Length: 66
Image (cartoon, rainbow, N blue to C red; front, side, top):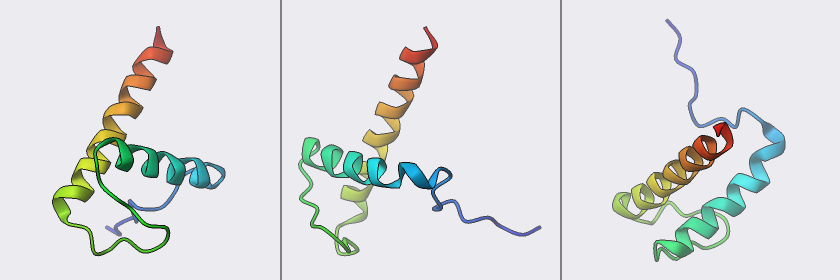
């Protein structure tokens, strides 16, 4: 079975908003991201950002279901 790329944006129109959201969350958790490539940040910091993004998206989805 072929693997799909889980890093692709399902809604291309949302890419800019997700990128802005990423920088906002990074700022909240105290990780300094620069514009462009950020492959030099630690896995721990990347996990903080991604985890907080998912947490906020789930909270928002739960709020919208009410």
